[in-house]
Image (cartoon, rainbow, N blue to C red; front, side, top):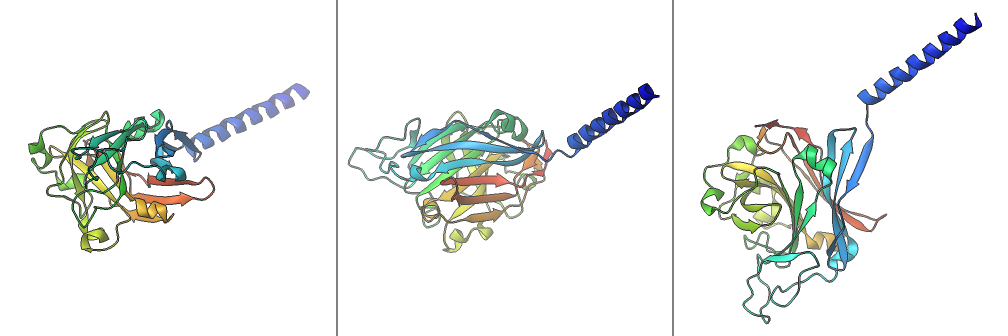
Length: 287
Protein backbone atom coordinates (compact mmCIF):
# COMPACT_ATOMS: atom_id res chain seq x y z
CA UNK A 1 0.00 0.00 0.00
CA UNK A 2 2.76 2.37 0.89
CA UNK A 3 4.54 1.63 -2.39
CA UNK A 4 1.35 2.08 -4.40
CA UNK A 5 0.60 5.36 -2.63
CA UNK A 6 4.13 6.61 -3.30
CA UNK A 7 3.91 5.69 -6.98
CA UNK A 8 0.57 7.43 -7.26
CA UNK A 9 1.91 10.63 -5.74
CA UNK A 10 5.05 10.54 -7.88
CA UNK A 11 3.02 9.99 -11.03
CA UNK A 12 0.64 12.82 -10.15
CA UNK A 13 3.52 15.19 -9.43
CA UNK A 14 5.26 14.27 -12.68
CA UNK A 15 2.06 14.79 -14.66
CA UNK A 16 1.42 18.20 -13.08
CA UNK A 17 4.97 19.34 -13.86
CA UNK A 18 4.61 18.16 -17.45
CA UNK A 19 1.31 19.98 -17.88
CA UNK A 20 2.75 23.13 -16.32
CA UNK A 21 5.67 22.93 -18.72
CA UNK A 22 3.36 22.54 -21.72
CA UNK A 23 1.19 25.42 -20.52
CA UNK A 24 4.26 27.62 -20.04
CA UNK A 25 5.59 26.90 -23.53
CA UNK A 26 2.20 27.56 -25.10
CA UNK A 27 1.74 30.82 -23.23
CA UNK A 28 5.32 32.03 -23.09
CA UNK A 29 5.02 35.78 -22.65
CA UNK A 30 8.53 36.27 -21.31
CA UNK A 31 10.52 39.14 -22.77
CA UNK A 32 14.23 39.03 -23.58
CA UNK A 33 16.25 42.08 -24.59
CA UNK A 34 19.44 41.84 -26.66
CA UNK A 35 21.92 44.63 -27.44
CA UNK A 36 24.38 45.38 -30.19
CA UNK A 37 27.85 46.73 -29.51
CA UNK A 38 28.23 50.33 -28.35
CA UNK A 39 29.51 52.63 -31.10
CA UNK A 40 30.93 56.12 -30.58
CA UNK A 41 28.65 59.06 -31.35
CA UNK A 42 29.79 62.55 -30.37
CA UNK A 43 30.86 62.37 -26.72
CA UNK A 44 28.68 59.34 -26.08
CA UNK A 45 27.45 56.19 -27.76
CA UNK A 46 24.70 54.61 -29.81
CA UNK A 47 23.76 50.93 -29.99
CA UNK A 48 21.06 48.74 -31.49
CA UNK A 49 18.69 46.63 -29.45
CA UNK A 50 15.80 44.25 -29.87
CA UNK A 51 13.12 42.72 -27.67
CA UNK A 52 11.72 39.25 -28.36
CA UNK A 53 8.58 37.86 -26.75
CA UNK A 54 8.73 34.16 -26.03
CA UNK A 55 10.99 32.36 -28.47
CA UNK A 56 10.15 33.88 -31.82
CA UNK A 57 7.96 36.99 -31.69
CA UNK A 58 9.59 40.37 -32.31
CA UNK A 59 8.26 43.02 -29.94
CA UNK A 60 10.70 45.92 -30.51
CA UNK A 61 13.64 46.86 -32.70
CA UNK A 62 15.47 50.13 -32.32
CA UNK A 63 18.46 52.12 -31.15
CA UNK A 64 19.57 53.58 -27.84
CA UNK A 65 21.28 56.97 -27.97
CA UNK A 66 23.14 58.24 -24.89
CA UNK A 67 22.39 61.79 -23.75
CA UNK A 68 26.03 62.88 -24.02
CA UNK A 69 26.18 61.75 -27.65
CA UNK A 70 24.45 65.02 -28.58
CA UNK A 71 27.59 66.84 -27.45
CA UNK A 72 30.68 66.94 -29.65
CA UNK A 73 28.88 66.05 -32.86
CA UNK A 74 30.77 67.11 -35.99
CA UNK A 75 29.09 69.87 -37.95
CA UNK A 76 31.14 70.87 -41.00
CA UNK A 77 32.41 67.86 -42.90
CA UNK A 78 35.24 69.76 -44.60
CA UNK A 79 37.06 70.34 -41.31
CA UNK A 80 35.34 68.20 -38.67
CA UNK A 81 36.39 64.57 -38.40
CA UNK A 82 33.54 62.06 -38.14
CA UNK A 83 32.86 60.23 -34.88
CA UNK A 84 35.11 57.20 -34.40
CA UNK A 85 33.92 54.31 -36.56
CA UNK A 86 31.82 56.64 -38.75
CA UNK A 87 32.47 58.26 -42.13
CA UNK A 88 31.11 61.16 -44.10
CA UNK A 89 29.24 59.32 -46.83
CA UNK A 90 28.08 62.62 -48.32
CA UNK A 91 30.30 65.71 -47.99
CA UNK A 92 29.95 68.67 -50.36
CA UNK A 93 32.80 70.80 -48.96
CA UNK A 94 35.46 71.93 -51.43
CA UNK A 95 37.94 72.90 -48.71
CA UNK A 96 38.26 73.19 -44.92
CA UNK A 97 36.80 76.69 -44.89
CA UNK A 98 33.45 75.55 -46.27
CA UNK A 99 30.41 75.59 -44.04
CA UNK A 100 28.42 72.36 -44.13
CA UNK A 101 25.46 72.01 -46.47
CA UNK A 102 22.06 70.37 -46.54
CA UNK A 103 22.41 66.62 -47.32
CA UNK A 104 25.90 66.27 -45.76
CA UNK A 105 25.70 62.89 -44.01
CA UNK A 106 27.84 61.04 -41.47
CA UNK A 107 27.07 57.31 -41.17
CA UNK A 108 27.98 54.49 -38.84
CA UNK A 109 26.68 50.95 -39.30
CA UNK A 110 25.32 48.99 -36.34
CA UNK A 111 24.88 45.23 -36.11
CA UNK A 112 21.44 44.12 -34.98
CA UNK A 113 21.51 41.35 -32.33
CA UNK A 114 21.63 38.00 -34.12
CA UNK A 115 18.48 36.46 -32.63
CA UNK A 116 16.43 39.54 -33.59
CA UNK A 117 18.03 39.69 -37.03
CA UNK A 118 16.88 36.20 -37.96
CA UNK A 119 13.29 36.94 -36.99
CA UNK A 120 13.03 40.37 -38.65
CA UNK A 121 15.07 39.84 -41.83
CA UNK A 122 17.21 42.86 -40.90
CA UNK A 123 20.91 42.37 -40.13
CA UNK A 124 22.48 45.83 -39.98
CA UNK A 125 21.27 49.37 -39.34
CA UNK A 126 22.72 52.56 -40.84
CA UNK A 127 22.68 55.36 -38.27
CA UNK A 128 23.13 58.77 -39.91
CA UNK A 129 23.82 62.25 -38.57
CA UNK A 130 22.82 65.16 -40.82
CA UNK A 131 23.89 68.46 -39.20
CA UNK A 132 22.00 70.52 -41.79
CA UNK A 133 19.20 68.08 -42.55
CA UNK A 134 18.32 67.05 -46.08
CA UNK A 135 15.97 67.75 -48.97
CA UNK A 136 13.29 68.83 -49.52
CA UNK A 137 14.10 72.33 -48.31
CA UNK A 138 11.60 73.67 -45.82
CA UNK A 139 10.53 70.14 -44.83
CA UNK A 140 13.49 68.11 -43.57
CA UNK A 141 16.30 70.69 -43.72
CA UNK A 142 16.82 70.59 -39.93
CA UNK A 143 19.55 68.83 -37.89
CA UNK A 144 18.45 65.23 -37.57
CA UNK A 145 19.32 61.57 -37.21
CA UNK A 146 18.12 59.12 -39.86
CA UNK A 147 18.10 55.41 -39.10
CA UNK A 148 17.85 52.88 -41.92
CA UNK A 149 16.41 49.43 -41.17
CA UNK A 150 17.15 47.66 -44.50
CA UNK A 151 16.12 44.08 -45.22
CA UNK A 152 18.92 41.58 -45.72
CA UNK A 153 17.49 41.05 -49.20
CA UNK A 154 16.64 42.88 -51.46
CA UNK A 155 19.37 45.41 -50.76
CA UNK A 156 19.06 48.36 -53.16
CA UNK A 157 21.53 49.19 -55.92
CA UNK A 158 23.45 51.84 -57.82
CA UNK A 159 21.25 52.21 -60.92
CA UNK A 160 19.42 55.51 -60.44
CA UNK A 161 16.94 54.59 -63.20
CA UNK A 162 15.59 51.93 -60.84
CA UNK A 163 14.84 54.37 -58.02
CA UNK A 164 11.41 55.00 -59.58
CA UNK A 165 10.92 52.36 -62.24
CA UNK A 166 9.28 49.93 -62.14
CA UNK A 167 6.74 51.50 -59.84
CA UNK A 168 6.58 50.07 -56.33
CA UNK A 169 3.20 48.34 -56.02
CA UNK A 170 0.83 49.83 -53.44
CA UNK A 171 0.37 46.47 -51.70
CA UNK A 172 3.96 46.80 -50.42
CA UNK A 173 3.28 50.19 -48.79
CA UNK A 174 0.86 51.34 -46.09
CA UNK A 175 -2.18 53.35 -47.15
CA UNK A 176 -1.28 56.94 -48.02
CA UNK A 177 2.40 56.22 -48.73
CA UNK A 178 3.84 57.37 -52.06
CA UNK A 179 7.35 57.21 -53.49
CA UNK A 180 8.55 60.81 -53.24
CA UNK A 181 9.81 62.32 -56.52
CA UNK A 182 13.49 63.26 -56.40
CA UNK A 183 14.07 61.29 -53.20
CA UNK A 184 16.57 58.81 -54.65
CA UNK A 185 19.99 58.60 -52.99
CA UNK A 186 23.20 56.92 -54.03
CA UNK A 187 24.36 55.02 -50.96
CA UNK A 188 27.25 52.71 -50.18
CA UNK A 189 27.47 50.88 -46.87
CA UNK A 190 27.57 47.27 -45.71
CA UNK A 191 23.90 47.59 -44.80
CA UNK A 192 22.34 49.37 -47.77
CA UNK A 193 22.90 50.64 -51.30
CA UNK A 194 21.10 53.24 -53.43
CA UNK A 195 17.38 53.70 -52.83
CA UNK A 196 14.42 56.07 -52.93
CA UNK A 197 11.92 56.95 -50.21
CA UNK A 198 8.18 56.51 -49.71
CA UNK A 199 6.30 58.57 -47.11
CA UNK A 200 2.79 59.73 -46.24
CA UNK A 201 2.72 63.53 -46.70
CA UNK A 202 -0.84 63.75 -45.37
CA UNK A 203 0.23 62.50 -41.93
CA UNK A 204 3.45 64.52 -41.85
CA UNK A 205 2.86 68.06 -40.48
CA UNK A 206 6.21 69.30 -41.82
CA UNK A 207 4.85 68.99 -45.38
CA UNK A 208 2.26 71.62 -44.51
CA UNK A 209 4.66 73.99 -42.77
CA UNK A 210 4.22 72.38 -39.36
CA UNK A 211 6.85 71.29 -36.88
CA UNK A 212 9.21 68.44 -37.76
CA UNK A 213 9.87 66.07 -34.85
CA UNK A 214 10.13 62.65 -36.48
CA UNK A 215 8.81 60.47 -39.25
CA UNK A 216 8.72 56.97 -40.70
CA UNK A 217 9.39 56.02 -44.31
CA UNK A 218 9.75 52.96 -46.50
CA UNK A 219 12.86 52.45 -48.62
CA UNK A 220 12.29 51.40 -52.23
CA UNK A 221 14.31 50.21 -55.20
CA UNK A 222 13.45 48.49 -58.50
CA UNK A 223 9.77 48.29 -57.66
CA UNK A 224 10.29 46.72 -54.25
CA UNK A 225 10.07 48.01 -50.68
CA UNK A 226 13.48 47.11 -49.22
CA UNK A 227 13.25 48.33 -45.61
CA UNK A 228 12.28 51.19 -43.32
CA UNK A 229 13.69 54.48 -42.13
CA UNK A 230 13.05 56.51 -38.98
CA UNK A 231 13.71 60.27 -38.89
CA UNK A 232 14.55 61.86 -35.54
CA UNK A 233 14.77 65.64 -35.12
CA UNK A 234 17.73 66.69 -32.96
CA UNK A 235 15.61 69.46 -31.46
CA UNK A 236 13.19 66.82 -30.14
CA UNK A 237 16.07 65.05 -28.39
CA UNK A 238 17.51 68.33 -27.09
CA UNK A 239 14.17 69.09 -25.44
CA UNK A 240 13.81 65.49 -24.18
CA UNK A 241 10.43 65.41 -25.86
CA UNK A 242 8.33 62.42 -26.86
CA UNK A 243 7.06 61.47 -30.30
CA UNK A 244 4.69 58.70 -31.38
CA UNK A 245 3.52 57.82 -34.86
CA UNK A 246 0.98 55.06 -35.48
CA UNK A 247 1.81 53.29 -38.72
CA UNK A 248 -0.21 51.39 -41.24
CA UNK A 249 1.27 48.15 -42.53
CA UNK A 250 1.46 46.79 -46.08
CA UNK A 251 -0.19 43.61 -47.32
CA UNK A 252 2.96 42.09 -48.80
CA UNK A 253 6.73 42.25 -48.44
CA UNK A 254 9.72 40.82 -50.27
CA UNK A 255 12.00 41.06 -47.24
CA UNK A 256 10.12 39.96 -44.11
CA UNK A 257 6.88 38.48 -42.81
CA UNK A 258 6.31 41.17 -40.14
CA UNK A 259 6.02 44.97 -40.20
CA UNK A 260 6.02 47.59 -37.41
CA UNK A 261 2.88 49.59 -36.73
CA UNK A 262 4.31 52.11 -34.26
CA UNK A 263 7.31 54.46 -34.05
CA UNK A 264 8.21 56.01 -30.69
CA UNK A 265 11.00 58.39 -29.72
CA UNK A 266 11.47 59.21 -26.05
CA UNK A 267 13.92 60.01 -23.28
CA UNK A 268 14.30 57.47 -20.48
CA UNK A 269 15.02 59.40 -17.26
CA UNK A 270 16.17 56.30 -15.39
CA UNK A 271 18.98 55.53 -17.81
CA UNK A 272 19.69 58.97 -19.22
CA UNK A 273 19.31 57.59 -22.75
CA UNK A 274 17.01 58.19 -25.69
CA UNK A 275 15.22 55.32 -27.42
CA UNK A 276 14.01 55.16 -31.01
CA UNK A 277 11.72 52.16 -31.30
CA UNK A 278 9.78 50.33 -33.99
CA UNK A 279 7.17 48.15 -32.28
CA UNK A 280 3.72 46.52 -32.43
CA UNK A 281 4.71 44.20 -35.25
CA UNK A 282 1.99 42.70 -37.40
CA UNK A 283 2.16 39.80 -39.86
CA UNK A 284 2.46 40.50 -43.58
CA UNK A 285 2.69 38.12 -46.51
CA UNK A 286 6.27 37.48 -47.57
CA UNK A 287 6.61 37.04 -51.32
